[in-house]
Length: 340
Ligand SMILES: NC(=O)C1=CN([C@@H]2O[C@H](COP(=O)(O)OP(=O)(O)OC[C@H]3O[C@@H](n4cnc5c(N)ncnc54)[C@H](O)[C@@H]3O)[C@@H](O)[C@H]2O)C=CC1
Ligand SMILES: O=C(CO)COP(=O)(O)O
Image (cartoon, rainbow, N blue to C red):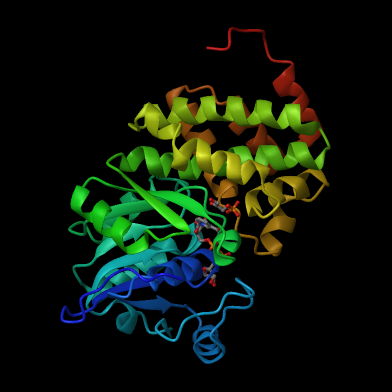
């Protein structure tokens, strides 16, 4: 692998990645490509950090990915973030507030880069908004795109968008992550990038149900396309720019997640189609961010009077116990209308 240029006379820049699941581990590995960076990866459980440091792999989450010696793995949060110019937050939504509260207690002036995808139930906040509650002074960015972690871990090509209201931060993160197999674009539309990443998971649940029921490629293409219409409707309502939803963090990620057998949201949809319930999915600890997100979306859409039939159908299966076959049938039976 070709390494990014670094002048040996300049001191290294420190960055931290929080969350040593699939995505945090792969983001940390991507960052180690830049020789000017010192990367620390924080794992919540000491035994997980110890095993990763010793074996130089994270077999439970990213089998086969070799962790370079330069990647420092620790379960000590203070050590992970000390002196870091930026902290990449890759914990799933269920751990976000707990981790942010701990970060706040440590103080610090790092920029924060949200790597997670979802919307908070109850507040309907994007994750960068949740982060800002704890560290209001921190410059914020979000990284999102068609980024199935296990493909990137195998060195397969992928691309992503880093969005920030602060152009210099987006450029900085782009410079750290860009490499021959990972092409990074910048954007100033933080809302659009985060909304696209959150909402594609809801459509992926529907696509997984459709695949699980064997409804075919025409049905799935219809769900992806009409799902995109719902993403644009809600995303623009929230303040995102329409064009962002046709970019990597919108359509790009939507296509990847809805078509992939490697997507956990798609898998959750397939399992629901096989008759499994929310309780079954929760018991298996599957990270499928579309599950909490769809609830947040449907509650919010009801409040503001937005029509989001696919999100509603997914919600009805997961939270109302309706049969996937029935709700997908009901989508087809809705009143006839113009496409646009
Ligand atoms: N896996 C992927 O391909 C991608 C995932 N993402 C997003 O990244 C986020 C993390 O997902 P993954 O890494 O895939 O999940 P994962 O299921 O692979 O790993 C989750 C990790 O978070 C840890 N964790 C769980 N609860 C925690 C808590 N309360 N505090 C701290 N750590 C906790 C777990 O121990 C585990 O190490 C999600 O929002 C996901 O949507 C984004 C892009 C790609
Ligand atoms: O966000 C992802 C791909 O970009 C990962 O999707 P899943 O969380 O459904 O696995």
